[in-house]
Image (cartoon, rainbow, N blue to C red; front, side, top):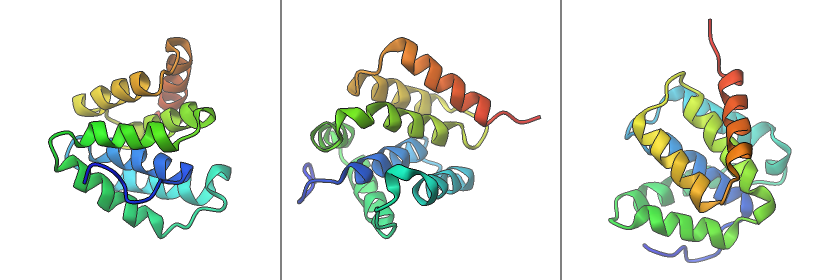
Length: 140
């Protein structure tokens, strides 16, 4: 599966990126799932989103990750279907999911770097978004 049969909604794109970050280290943690669920249930961008689509996006991401060029295909869909106005939102959500369990795995860091590149997130903006995620997920 290299292309989605139908265009993804902007919210589908956001969910797919969050799931991709969670799955990037091949260990989907409960804290990451809770973060995704919380975002989908509480953020205004998801107000009209059908939460049952989260499962469909999970299946899509895992199918893509099982393919050699799956990550490229995912980014192709994101570039096609996510409005530019939501690029920083997408990166912020990805950072929150990566930070949710209190540790950043090397694979998560590499994927975040790829997301920054693919979505052309300005370095200064990325640093601010990352700093905010770190501050929100700090523990004692």
